[in-house]
Length: 243
Image 1 (cartoon, rainbow, N blue to C red):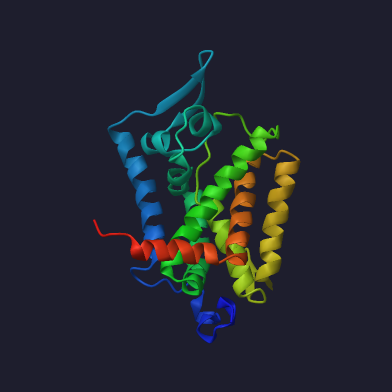
Image 2 (image 1 turned 180 degrees about the horizontal axis):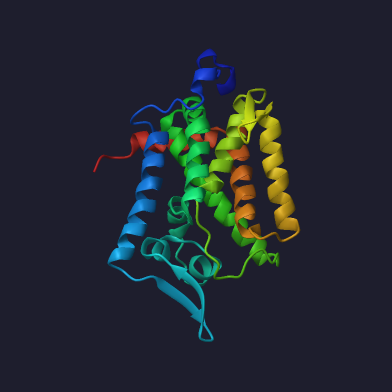
């Protein structure tokens, strides 16, 4: 019997937007909001970090954003691979944070219950890492989706992994696009993926970010297709010695 066939794993309507206190979803929302607020509060005491070329400022980084963002320059040239994790907790502006956290709030609880909390956290983080990897891969393949120094930030890659998982768990669930247009969840997710693919192929204004969305969706799909990977990670976590 597969995981999806178990009676207690079948989703119900109340699992949407039902964030339990102390859940992984609740902690992820809290950490994302905390980092966003802290980064802006630090601007009172610390200056922005300007990336310059030929006397021209290319980008101004906020304090935490400077150390946590991911790019080809930092991730590959300077071998700072840890940024594949930290960029997932940074956001460019309030709207960026709001939409990502709304998606996490509505769909995270269902996926967390389906996978169990111990498997949900690596699922989310690996989907985000998949987003960074896809961004890098397309740059290395010659897709001009961004300059090597352009920062990649945001939880969107992990969110796309969650959306793909939710669409597999409850494909026929009806959701409202823009709060007004009803459609099945799997249709909504396919529209998001098609839009991201269009932006990448035609080098839209956020092609780099959309490439990360595709990477997160791909990893989310693979992890749902091969859940034994997450089961193995959860098993290792249980056997890890306490510190």
